[in-house]
Amino acid sequence: MGGSFCTAANCMDGRVQIPVIKYLQDRMGVAYVDMITGDGPVRSLGGTADPRMKAALLRRIGVSVRAHESRAVAVVAHADCAANQVPDEQQRRELAVAVEEVARAFPAATV
Image (cartoon, rainbow, N blue to C red):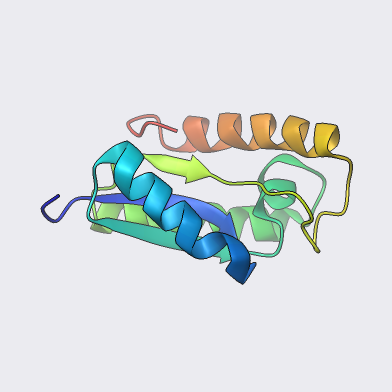
C-alpha cells in the first residue's frame, strides 16, 4: 500500500471510525486515511447547518488533499447519527449534495 492517502469527511461517532478506515484502505488501496470529523458532517456539507462549519470542514479536507496528496475524498453518512437526526432519505439527499460540494471544491480528487 505504500505511503498513499485518501481523506474521509466522517462523523465523530466512534462506531464508524474503524469500519470506514478499513473500507477505504481496501477500496482505494491506500495505507492511510486522513479522518476529518465533525458532528454530522453530511448535514454541514450538504444540509442546512452553520456555513462556518462547512467552511471549516472544506478547509481541513483541503489540508489533507494538498499536504498528503489524497487522490480520493469520501463523504460518510451513517444511520442513528446523534447530530443529524433526520429520516434516512433526507440524510441521503444531504449526502448527495455534500458529495457535489466536495467534488466542486476538489475537482482533481475522486469523491
